[in-house]
Amino acid sequence: MTDKFSNSLDSNLKNTQGSSLQGSARRVSRDRERERLSAMFPSNSQHFNHVNAVAIQDVPALNHMDLNESSAFMRNQASDGAPPYAESLMSNSKKLQDDLEKIGSKIKQHEDNLKFLKTQKNQLDDSILDMQVSLGKYISSRAPKPEDEDPSHVQSEEETIEQILKYEKTAAGILCQLKTRHAVQVSNLTSTQDVLGVVAMLGKVDDDNLGRLLSEYLGVETMLAVVCKSYEGIKALEMYDEEGGVNKGLGIHGLGVSIGRALEGRFLVICLESLRPYAGEFVADDPQRRLEIPKPRLPNGDAPPGFLGFAVNMITIDRENLYCLTPGGCGLRETLFYNLFSRLQVYRTRAEMHLALPCISDGSISLDGGIIRTSGMFFLGSRVDAGLRFPKSSTISELPERYFEIGKQIKQKRWEKERIQEDMQREQHLLDQAKFNFQIKKQEFVKFLADSSSYMTQVVPLLAFKRN
Image (tube, rainbow, N blue to C red; front, side, top):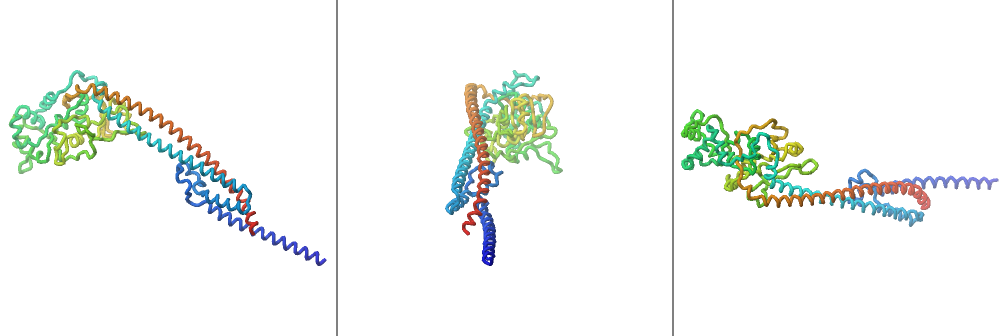
């Protein structure tokens, strides 16, 4: 009886101790499992740095999983007697890691290819635009003209002078009168030695219609403005008495009185050395020293249709006025005409100009009569030809052969652009497919993490119990 009771007590004690040991093993395994998971999920993984960040940023597990550490843990567990499935987990983990890295590399490669192709396309767009600007004078001659325009009439330099002389009681009219009829005397006058000329006579255009539009854009007052090289020239044009009133007997006022044309009202004078010149580069090897202004771009990156060029570069300037008119060595284009036109854009039609509104900041004109002064300021209604406009250049007849050559080059560039656009579409398709494959592989990897975590939750307690 006593022996039975002792045996029963020993058995109960063993059972109690066994239960206690199993409880301790479970607690130890849970603690070790937390440590293992902490080791398996460090904050910065070194294995996915070159996988596209956009593609994986929505998968926290991928950003925090250290697969090498996990594989090492599985290897240790397998050596401690864990089932062979641990080795399979390690192998699958390495394979998934390699697959994700390969797909990530493909994504980056396709993105780099797209970036390169877009750069090539933009360069072709710029080349095409440059050649279209060169052809602008021919295109403009085929552009629709206002109904009231006489296409047979082209204004010459002599006709522009005659138009200025009609404003006989202006500073410009007086200076032109003196220059055409008293040229010898004018060259010796101190009051006019610094005068370069009148705006309307300092530039020419290759198309008479363009000359009309630019003149209308500037307005008669600006077209009649007198241009001086320095502030000393401005002081010589007008002098004042002791009370601050204009001395009608000196300067240009005195010259007007001397030829029977007393100057009336105010007049505009432009001082070149006081203007802020264009600060950018010039078109390489261009005898006219045209300005290298970045071409306009629509929000999607494309060139606006119908763009012919910038007005400041469509003015032809006499060679002697291209250089060294200011102490800084600047010519008329980067001083006078850049300040008058800034980045005024020229388009073939009003409809194309309106389509390009998102990339127009300093105004624009169209060859069929549209005018936008500045962004948001439209000039509407029918125009009235004041007759005063820039004279037409006489160099256009020398370029027909060059015109056809440039047209051929434009056609070739457009063909190259179409091929690049096809390559871009192909690369975009491959990029989309690679990103799709990445998402599929990512889901497979996340499922693997969940399955392996479930497996480790079952195996670790057994291993912990075995060690104890």
